[in-house]
Length: 415
Image (cartoon, rainbow, N blue to C red; front, side, top):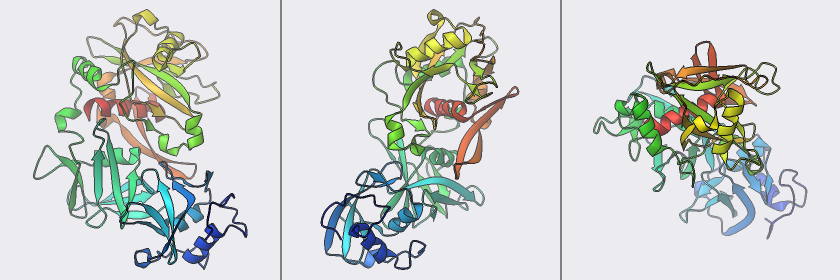
C-alpha cells in the first residue's frame, strides 16, 4: 500500500491509487458483489498505515475529506473492520492494517423489529445502516450508557466481535417503548431478546406514574426543572433528523424557534397550533407551532418564537410568559428548531395572519402528553424506511416535525 496519503478521490480508483485498490483486491478478488466475511480475526499483519480513513458520527465513510458515496464500496470495507486490543479500529488484510478514525461507532442501528410475544420469548432484530441484520441475544448484547453530566442515554448493539452499532434516536425510542420492568427489580427497566434481559444502566423511566400527565401545575413544575433555561448553555440532547444530515448541511443549518403556547382553562389546559394554507409552496396544509427562523433582529430562538407568535396568531409579546426551552430538533429541510414552552393568558383568542396561517386551533395538553396518542408510523423516503409520529385530533393531522417535538417534550418531562 502507499506510504503516505493519496490526494485523489477514493471512489474513482485510478491506477495510481494503490491504497484503495490493494484493499479491494485483497478483500474481494471477485469484485464488489462479494458477500463473505473474511476471517479477519485470524490475520496478523505486520504493517500499520494511516491513509486518512474515517467513519463519522452519522455513519458516513470518508477518505482525506472526501465522502464515499458508493454503498457497495462501503459495505465491502465494513467486512474487514476490526477493533484490536489497543482500542483502535482498523481495516485488516493478511498483510496490512489501515487505521480508521471512528468518531462514535462504526455502524448505526436504524431499525428494530420484534418477533414473538413481549417478554422472555421475544426476539429483537436490528437493521444497520449498511443493511446488515443483527439479532440481540447472548452473543450480540445491548448496552445503554449514560452521560455522567447530562444523563443522556447512548444505546449500543454488538454487531460482531468488538464492533458496535449505535442506535439512532428513533430506533432507541422504539426500543424504549418495548421496555418492561425487571423481574428482580421492578424499578429497573429493560428489554428482552432471545431469553436475555438487557437492563438500562439506570431506569429510562421509573414506572407508570412517571408516564402520566396529572394536570397543568405538575406539567409546569416539571417544565421549570427539566427544560433548558431560557438563556445559557443547552443541556438537552439534540434530536430530530440530525443523523440524516451531512456535516456540510449541519454546518449551514438555519436556526429557528417555535412557541408551544400553553393556555390554562378550567376544563383543562390546551396547546395552540396552526395549520398552514394549502397555497403555500412548502409544507402546505401541515400543522405547526407558531414560529420561524431567527432573523437578524432576534437575539435568539426565544425571541424569534415570541415574535413569530405575535405575527402569526396575534399573541402580544407582553402577554407571553416563556418558561423554558425544549430539546433542539433538526429537520431534513435544514433547520435547527428550539421549542420554547410558554404560558399564554387564559382568555387569549388566536387571530390567524392571512397568507401565513389558514387556521389556529387548540388541542388539549393532556391529549398531547398521553403516549397512547403518539402513533408510530413508517414511510419510505429517499429509499429508506423512516419512522415518524402522528397524533390525529379533531380532524387535524399532527405529524412529522411538530409531532416529533411534542414527543420529545413528553419524554423530557415524563420519561
